[in-house]
Image (cartoon, rainbow, N blue to C red):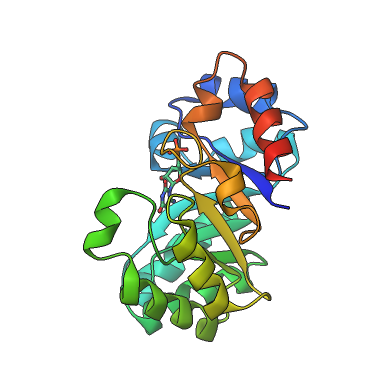
Length: 212
Ligand code: NUP
């Protein structure tokens, strides 16, 4: 049984609030990222807080430790409950992100293997497995692993064990189905297949039921 996270990659406050409001009661969390936040500012977190579900900032943080900590301060200061970071900058950068998240009462998820075809160039295979081990050693709360390659997500699950969560993008527009990964993960991430749907609430409802 997996939760449903909406990837709210729309532009502007009006559209973001329209989709989030339409999906009330059908979501377990909302994931925001650069497309929305660059068009609205971080104030959008306060506007979305009315939905009373956790807001997770997918900023794929990838910098030196001090900069990572400063990014976390802003994200959690704005009211987010979680952040998504990269791990490829190394264990010190990752530790800074995890520690800053926990200092602010938030959670930190680590991108290990990405869902798109180009992930096979770097963000997959042995690199992904090393990053999963690094995420576990750093005390991260979970990892991001692809619904588009369920067998890889299953492998990453064996590395991190059951005490960490996996959130999995790639369902819907990228071609994966909830049934492909729901037994390996704690949540599926769905963007376009919900926010571009004629009836976002109905689409979210269907994904949520299928993820159960
Ligand atoms: O590996 C990843 N793949 C991915 O699609 C890691 C991610 N964080 N994402 C994000 O998930 C992506 O940036 C987008 O916000 C969402 C998937 O959206 P969609 O393909 O369902 O529209």
